[in-house]
Image (cartoon, rainbow, N blue to C red; front, top):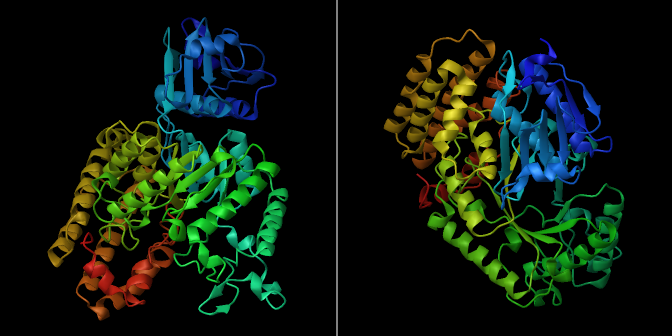
Length: 594
């Protein structure tokens, strides 16, 4: 294939150009464009530096040539806007910032060449081959995202890379690994984290003998717990500040630096006489102000994030002023982990009324405090097996219509960002549709779920797409029905739909169909477990416990390698939370679980 595989009118497009002093993400975007043009068209276009000239893709931002701003014609009200415009033999690839120049490349590849980024790894990308691409006269393609901060929390470079290709502009790192940090900087996306680090900032347990007064008083005695301290003690606050300063100086800066209370619903804060004058949330916000000032000094370009979560879910009741009125702060509303995620939050059902009350209380408090910072909401849609999150046994069949409805609702509230605590690296079980669609909703939540399905199933499953879509739709209905012996048989009988799909000759498609069959077995298994719990049949659920624990790590380990995390996060909480802790009554009496 020659370079003439790409033409604009009667002119061949034979190179990719950017300014000699282009930012790193713009240079990376040029390399990505060259790579995917080779994969789809077989065209080998060199990447060179220089000015915009006929016969080239020219990748830039609106900060560079004056004509770039003129041609961009960005849509108002969108985030990370990008444009691709053909003028006078030049294909202008323009971003309003360096990362959106990269988004412009990915958007162009999807729009013009049918490339898709469904999940981590090349095996889940669609790069259709074609002979040539004729850029039509006057070609223009303009994109942008509906949500300003689009955060993804996962593990591993492949997951981050795939999310960024779908216009995620912020990645959550629990630790600053060099590889993931460099990945973010190369692509120009925000780095957010580390999150649960209070344990690193409280006095060391080695100080307990000499200074027991540093540690929390709980149930009449002071003792270390590795998470909190006696924060009314001035020396503890001094140690907190010194440790935070050392932490910041030992690491490259985050764009959004977060300190969250530890991931425990009962954080055991000190209840000594001096600490008891304020509730947990107010002590936490006291530390937030201390920390925000230190972060502002050490990392002046960083936003400081605090969280409404577990012990800090309930807003303060007394007046409060934030450091610099919170102008460089972000509140993370992480409240919805006790709601039914299969019903839209706006319905205020299935635990959502409580979440709304907490959210509304925080909003009132922030307004009264003169808070001028940002607001982000973090959801837990992936926890469909977690206690209190909805009907048991949905088997990673995410509630996509609910996610779309919630996204539109959150946008209406004027939130600055959205996130989901995804916590996974591989997510193609039973297909990558759920997370791929969710990521796309950050950019276009007004688009219908059915139209996303139209795009996904035909592309990912080829000629089998219609049959697979029909099966998944039927499976979701059956898995959402009230669990009973008859319901389990309806789920089991759906295997006929899978068996009716002709055996694919393509190895990748055959693997995808096989994963659907493995997932179907998982659906039957989790339904059987849930029915045993509902019936109080201890011998039955105990007999199913080991097959469930072995499902990912042993029984199907090789077949699911690279497709899904093994084991799935939280998948064993049925047994640990309900059965072994003696909480079966919580399951059977929960008003919105069936």
